[in-house]
Length: 409
Image (tube, rainbow, N blue to C red; front, side, top):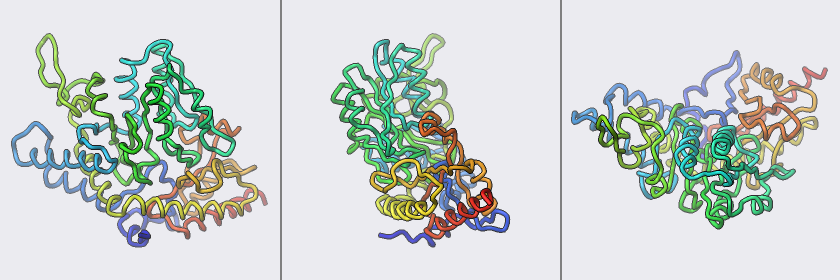
């Protein structure tokens, strides 16, 4: 099924906005997506009809809030193919999800002489927690390099993952290059050596079908705000048997089963990792976002973005002084295009485009080591989603041509 983009756009109030005199062309979806009225409405409905704390009350609104909160957890589980809702832990974002694993599982299991393997494409949130764990424990942090065409060097991965490796952490889709990494193959390499794998699905879960069973991953996380949901909430999936063995890393509230003045015991999964009053409203709104994407069909979402990216790459080829980072074809590539001009600084390009109503991202995209491996300190980035069109790609290319004329005249 082809997405009805005009119908989809009608669900997003912000897309009616103008920047100055120009209609908004929003191409910064890798940073955060816009929200449909259905998600905004779910937030409003909670706060206006059954705002109450969960798990702790016998009154009507508390029961309603608890049911909606836990139903959202079940929706997340179904969305990523997890068999048990108990394997879904609410976090603030993917960054917190990774940190939870690095502190809870990592501090318990990683020792001096062990190895942690990550990819050269990781977001800072996928590097620094493991870097800090390696420093705390005396383990070695190893990096799987990229190839010249912006893909992961799987031959090197086969050599770097050894019997000393305890954790492999890999981004499924690069937030800079758009490259879709074969995390299933990385997981097999990890498991063949007795290691675990954590998948960062921040850029992939919003844009393609995810099945943790098929991926055979041990942990996976993503943030709701990149997939039509609200900010401030994310998800950690973990194999229940691993989560059971892991100690909590924050304490208080509903994560506690019993307390005395001398000791405490912990609640069952997943509540053991959800200290204090949870982000109830945003969890419910995340469920609404998942409903929206599920109704569209993630295969259809992927097909739409694949076609849009293919068109965009063909249009970028017209810009002789612009270099696209990463793969220049759509094989194993998502809807993220980072690029550099041979003369114009990315910040200048971004500012000029903004004056035309076109929102892109500039900088190192929280992946400084990766961007700097291209011998630059910053890059511009356009990223697409379900409501973007070929006409908007044309406006981007025309805007870049106008920017070039202005700066180089």
